[in-house]
Length: 202
Ligand code: VGL
Ligand code: ZN
Image (cartoon, rainbow, N blue to C red; front, top):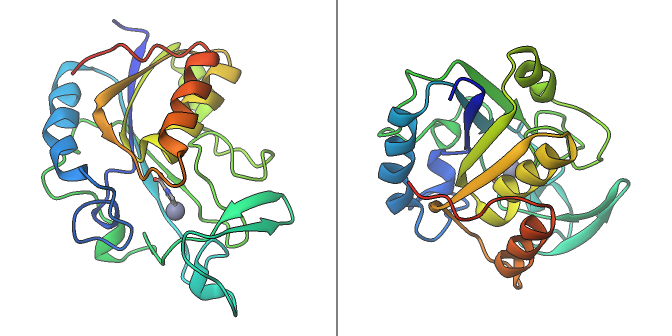
């Protein structure tokens, strides 16, 4: 469909097996995502792209513990292991991902003090990435999401997309979750409540 875009979220080495923030089952997602990429005409890739010493890294704080929840000026934030540092192999796309068809790559998390799970809006809920304007300028009104991680960057992106007025679906079998303290189940519920179609297949 000419008004559809596939949004491939954070298919990067650090989120795959052996990476700094490996998502269980990520390797199996790659062929599923590639199947979707061959099927869609309009492709957006997102890339988590942090400067060294990013505020979301536990190592940036004196007593920072990876996977602990802390309070940032903009609200709750989870501290993560160092990951997807700009220009490092961990920040590169998985070597088997079909990247040639992508028309745009949105990099997020590049402001040192603000994390960005969503590809539309950073975690302060104010700073915008510009993806919304790009999609609307191209007349792309129906968005299909896949990639990593289901319960963080995929879910936050999909929910923001709904709030921005897009028709949204997620291909669950082309995703994998971090599942931190029930986050997978919680975000599936939030997505369903937001009117996101979770019944698409690869
Ligand atoms: C992500 C945690 C930190 C993701 C990115 O891609 O879901 N999660 N940075
Ligand atoms: Zn990140």
